[in-house]
Length: 409
Ligand code: PLP
Image (cartoon, rainbow, N blue to C red; front, side, top):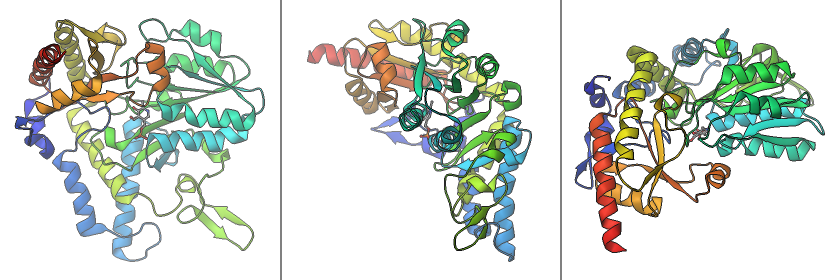
């Protein structure tokens, strides 16, 4: 377990909600931010703020150094080969849309296949639906096993020589499953397809090495990894990015502009139109520093312990149904569940009355809800600042909610 003092680094966690100390179990939606990240961003605005790349004045240079320095930190964080492979975006959704609109439009034609799974987040479904409609391509889904895992046999059955793109989440934001990305990438490549990874729920929680995974694109968001909202990353292999057209035109991405023709900057800037998200990148850089000081291995161990503890404690509450694989080693640190026939929104409201924040709804995974045959679920998701006591408070809250709804019904 990580040191409980970590909690003290997060000012927001020091408050009471509805008269109870806050237990924040919604980090899969967005994580909280340590003082270090908040300070890095306010320091940037207090001392360095200026537009990047254009200025010859000192502040312009400081802002550029801060922004490009953050790119180097991201490169190290995911072990990309070069800094040109790191594109700053608004987040995972924007990153995946860039791949669909740029690589997809240029490389997918009528009758070609795009392969995804039933567990994907809407952000990794709709860009491909739109592309398939536009191009007359076929969108195919890898079937899930009963426990919500993917087998490589099913991947082999679904991916064919007509497949141009395979796009799969690294970790499910509902089932908690950790998908075998390296092996799926090998299958995609063997069939001549590229591999796109939605890493929104993986990058904050485990060591990601894009060279080891050998995926072609990897997308993630700063706000889920103790960084600010509004900044994310698209990693892409340089040889692919070099051949791709930008999707946003103007501002920072231009090289020469004529009346009827223009040219673009080199990588990575050709994909960063307009004034970039400078303070966001600085905050993301500080978030990476923070996570690396703790050590991603320690983050992973801590979360695995909490997930195991929570699975055990929550299963002891009669009426709790947990979705996804039940073996803790097969899953990440979030638990999606229902309590008898209590609507998850009602359950989350009662928990909130006791200072416990969980998410309720479809978690941007409506096709997966259909697959699970539920309209909605509750979800408790854990991060570095959570403790066994937080899990105990959740379990107490579930017992209170059970009594409350039994009484009312
Ligand atoms: N993919 C997964 C698995 C997610 O959990 C999320 C966010 O909830 C996203 C994509 C979208 O991320 P963002 O809203 O930061 O673009």
